[in-house]
Image 1 (cartoon, rainbow, N blue to C red):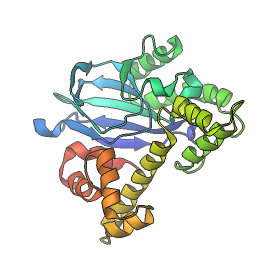
Image 2: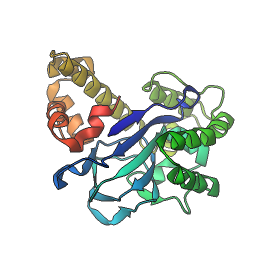
Image 3: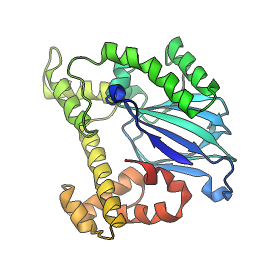
Length: 276
């Protein structure tokens, strides 16, 4: 079972999505017990509820999240792969990076490409949140605990200009806020603010969003039997299909066409089936 859950509307500009994955009761061969993720700008709170997760790509055998464990991951500048030696159940809460920065004060650029224990990184109340979520009786209760924790904190820091619209607008909003913030409104200062708030440079955030939207368009067209990757590239603003393929491989390791084939026959690409 793989499920993508949208948070309550009042948290729509704070939490990008909640992803739940459970293979309990599923007969999967060992080669299908992997999780292939694209590069992403979204930091995440990861909770290992059953079994364990091991980082496979990039290879880090010491990076194991045991049952009952919790990690905070930063944005990822390259595709990653984790593995589960046996049945697993985990929950991943993906945050908009500038929202997590406001909530915690973390400089997002310092945790890019990292998976870190909560101790010493997040305050005691966040560590207690993770403990309560792990101990909850089910996923619905976990989400309720999360939302009740975040609601007052997000309302306190979100600011009057916070945004609850389409996901892609957060990049444009971030750029505008960085350009207008405080003293030193130069392009260089704005870029520094964006790195602190979002972890990655604006150019990469734009490319990531464009690649994501082009994948959605390709997936929808394929479902309708009207797939033309050339048209997808044109509508996505790429110079040509080869340009789109290069950026897609940078973000996912594969071209859009290859991803569409894999997600239909390879369980390890489950995130591409549910992401929207």
